[in-house]
Image (cartoon, rainbow, N blue to C red; front, top):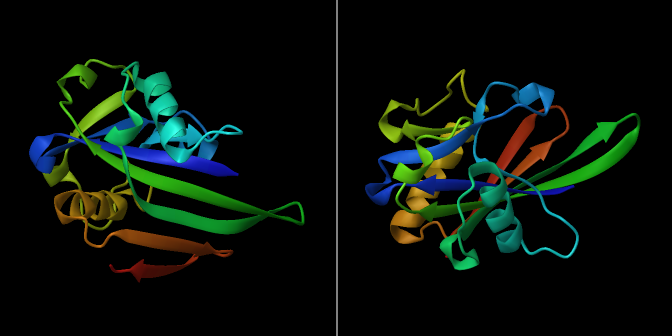
Length: 160
């Protein structure tokens, strides 16, 4: 199970485009980055361009998106271990074209709690902070976030 998650910021990183999720059920009516499942044969950049267009109607290019983090883990469903990977990408663009979309929400970054926000997926504020850090100076260059069964989280940073 491989997915992409994209965060598009305004110039100066004051705003971020998010989407109000309808599914899966555990994300229903909560904000998350824009993305979805990677199809067979797609690169993460190709999947991000496709998913962003499907969810916003806006065309982007592969080189608009910087891959700065992977989040991964294993979940057990009916006794079967299933590995999952979410490749997280970020971009900077004019967000004014997104403000009228029904499910897309442009959020003022300064209003996001640095810890948790009940209207968002639990780890999203941290991921937004990492994305801004990456876009500003490419440091850290890459962050891996590993989830263990039982929701124990281990973060490991790769600094280059």
